[in-house]
Every structure is written in structure tokens, then in C-alpha cells.
Length: 282
Ligand code: GUN
Image 1 (tube, rainbow, N blue to C red):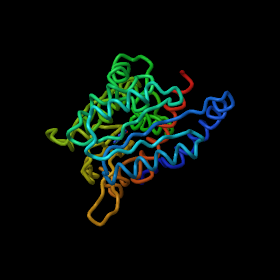
Image 2: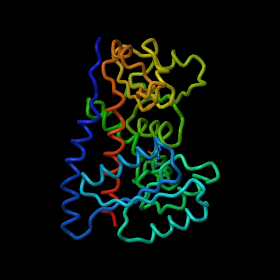
Image 3: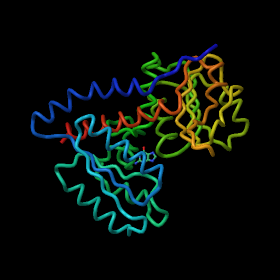
């Protein structure tokens, strides 16, 4: 079998085109949606992610503010900036790029963001809303993965087994809950799961979010599975690769996302979508 690629780049472009009308309507009412992006320190990967988010806003007609701080910023100063952004009615979404420097308590900073402006969906109020099936902002990466599954006809996952490899608060755990919402049978595994290969081979839908280059090989994939690769790993030669061995896995899976050009663009499209939603809900 040669898997079909799920083209995140073109699906994200489609999502952004759908958003354009809502953005235009908000702008016509004199309320342009606006996102504040906060970056602390000079982590090169974070700088690229933030630049991509800001340029995506510009292309979508969404206003953006870039708040950059040195790595030695005091936590109290960062919290004060967040409180000021909460009070600013012209800002609808606030995103603090992670990871933060070690001396800053990341969850404390996230909890300082107003849940109504938490377009990352990381605040406990939004995480809790997902857990109990209430409306709220959903984390962008898992939301983008769900849109990709819908795109290939996997909307209702009743009777299907989904395996999520990775247990982070920002991808693995919310991903598992969203798959459960769609009636999948869900297993959360991680790099320390005994016989990870056998667990993965049960998966009709396999989501890899481990952060280890090509940890998922062809022998870990059920023939005909849909494979969603959230990993973005930089190899010593500077190139990017996912958590899945793309070439080998393509021989076994029915559907697979590439890296780059898969989940990454969808994450950004969902961030824009959450920002527009935040503006509409004011
Ligand atoms: N760092 C890696 N992924 C993300 C994300 O989705 N949001 C934020 N704020 N930081 C990240």
C-alpha cells in the first residue's frame, strides 16, 4: 500500500479562506480581531514559530502585537504584562510562546491569561471545559489534527481504536480527549510504554507526538491506518523530520501527514480560528 498524503498546507489554506469572511465581517463592524504574541528569550525554534504566527495573522487580516522580552525577565513583570493585555479591549487573543525560561512558572503564567483570551486553550478553565465536554478554546495542534481526520472522512470514530503516543498537556492529553469525544476507543502511550510497537499496531488512527525523530517505524503501523505526525525534529544536518519514519510508514498506512507541511500549518490555522472566535465572543 502507498499511503495518501494529508496535505496540511492546502487544508490550512482552505481553513484560512473560510475564516476570511468572518474576519471581513468583524472588520466591517470596526472590530478587527487582534492577537498578542508574547515571546521570552531567544530560543531559535520559538522565534521561527512566533514569526510564522505573526505573518499568518497579517495574511488573514488579523492584527497582531509582538511582545518580546529578554530571557532574564522576572516572572512578576511578565504577569503584569499579561494583566495589562487582559485589560486591553483591542486584544482578543493572548499567546505566550512555550517553553518559557526555567525560572518562570509556565502554568502560573498561563493561568494569568483571561480564559476568554486563551486562544491556545491551555488555561485550566479551557482544559477543564474539554474534559467535561463544554464549549471553550481547544488547543490548536490537536484541533488541527481532528480537522485533518475529518478531511479524510474520519469524523465519527466509533468502532475505531486511536493510539496517541505522547502525554503532554498541550498535545497528547487534549488529543486523547478530542478523539474520545468522537467516540474512538483511545489509548495514550509514551516512549516508556512496554512494547510500544504492539500498542501502536492496534491503531486505526495513530497520533505521534513524542518529539523523537522517526521513533515510529513501519513495523509499528497497522496496515490501512491513518497516521498523524505531530513531531517536528531537527536532524544534525539541519533538516526537519517527524516522529514517524515517513517513507517506510507510507508503505503500510493508508493516510499519512508529512513533516514539514502536515500538522504545523494546521496548528497555525486553528490559532487564527480561535482568535476570530475570541473576537466574535466579545
Ligand atoms: N510551543 C510549542 N507548541 C506551542 C503551542 O501550541 N502554543 C504555544 N504557546 N507554545 C507552543
